[in-house]
Image (cartoon, rainbow, N blue to C red; front, side, top):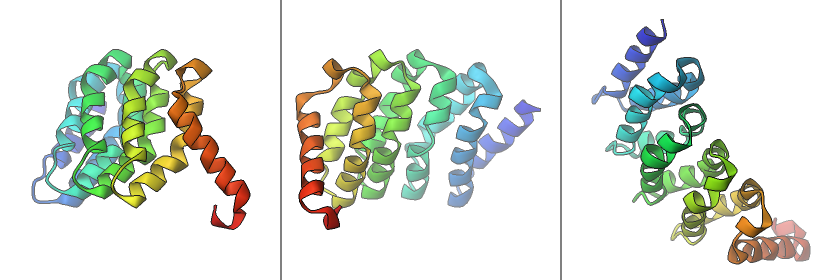
Length: 181
């Protein structure tokens, strides 16, 4: 049964004539990950996600950026670091600001799918880049996630001083001007 559902969703993800079908397929791949299990996720779902990161339609890439966390929880750290993280990093550097914004909003969820000792090396550079993005919308989304990201690093020694300083500055600005927050 799972195989049949998976093949239908994969078929949707390959429908070059229907951007909406590909966007729906990527969301379904993420949602079905737990039910499909690690083996099917590694063989098909992860491969499909990575392929959809290169979709010509920015809406599909945007949906893909938001659809990594559940798959990552199922497939395990080694697969995430080797296959999924490079693809997600590409989305965090995508030419379209909407895709980068979706990556900023999804970064903490993906980070939480990894063991805590892998999070700093995998995500600090990405978060730093998103915080300095050329798009105001991307920067704002990254700033909104910064506290959660710091918490995801779990140990004080894993939190880079620059990120902590930036977070404290945001808090201080919010206290000084509560209406702006």
